Amino acid sequence: MHFEVLCTDIVSRARRGRLQTAHGVIETPVFMPVGTQGTVKATTPSELLEVGAQVILGNTYHLFLRPGLEVIQHAGGLHKFMAWDRPILTDSGGFQVFSLSKLRRITEEGVHFNSHIDGSPCFLSPEVSMQVQQMLDSDIVMAFDECPPYPCEHEYAANSLDRTLRWAQRCRAWAEQKRDHKNSLLFGIVQGGIYQELREKSARGLVSLDFDGYAIGGVSVGEPEPEMMRAIDNSEPFLPQDKPRYAMGLGTPPQLVEMVARGVDMFDCVLPTRLARNGTAFTATGTLNLKNATYRTDLRPIEEDCSCSTCRSFTRSYIRHLIKAEEILGLRLITIHNLHFYLNLMNQMRTALEAGTFAQFREHFVANYAKYEPQASEREAELDE
Image (cartoon, rainbow, N blue to C red; front, side):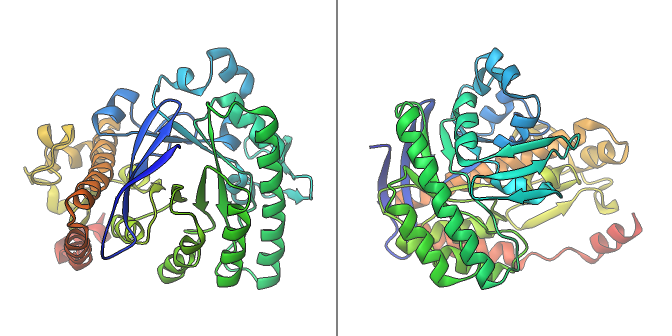
């Protein structure tokens, strides 16, 4: 057994779990920092460990194109290449093929596309994606899927889903024939767009193939938040209780809390690192734009009572100075804080689930975060600068 549910919430569908992988145990609910190209931007592996990262995400598409499999294999796999000895989940590359490649041709066999780096012709299929992820030595491998755009017509979503299910069968077959089951776990990806019956069809079809875990894909692709939540609600009831569930590419802190309440165990999102590079920091009451003039002489840390190395040592005033001076350290310091905030949020939810107080935690956190409004001076400063 790779996944164990340790306890459940009596009010919601939230659960506290434990996932065993080849490179270590993952305590869930868990947030996975995004290390698309073999690095979580602006951080080192030791800093990731310090903020509490258990598992990080890499991407088949990007690593396949650059530096290429030969380089990573020569280094002994992705873990050794990037000096990270904990679990790694790799996305199959499907989302990137459809979002980054302007020229692509979808066939039953796979997808022909042009590299976004140099325009060279490339090809990814279920079998190629599986092989690449095996060569990367991924702990959690994602099945190759098609991620339909938002919005899309029902006919397109239905045809795309049928193809994704056929591709999932091929991924499962390849895995059965060629991978060592002790080395990696294989997750299927639920698709179906905004259509309830397609989400159910996708989930039931994948469950019949008996994957090690199940992701909910095709969310956070431009749809309104209520549609995002409905996609989770239309998928989760048809997924087995004894397998981990992973919502791909999500989300804001309140969204994470709400999706844990809906029975999701695993998350990844670029927000904490991407917004950090724009000068934005997360706090329990909302975000702070540290470029704003209101922080010019503010000697408080980003967040009071935060235990991250940034907040222990540096002030908002200093970090704003670094940002305005275009010093890289400023963006690194916010990145460290934001990752700590996300990972600590997951730790707080695990603790609340163990204590039987998740419902209270959920209500308090979401209410306080939702109440946050930027001060007038912050809005004016943002416009001025």
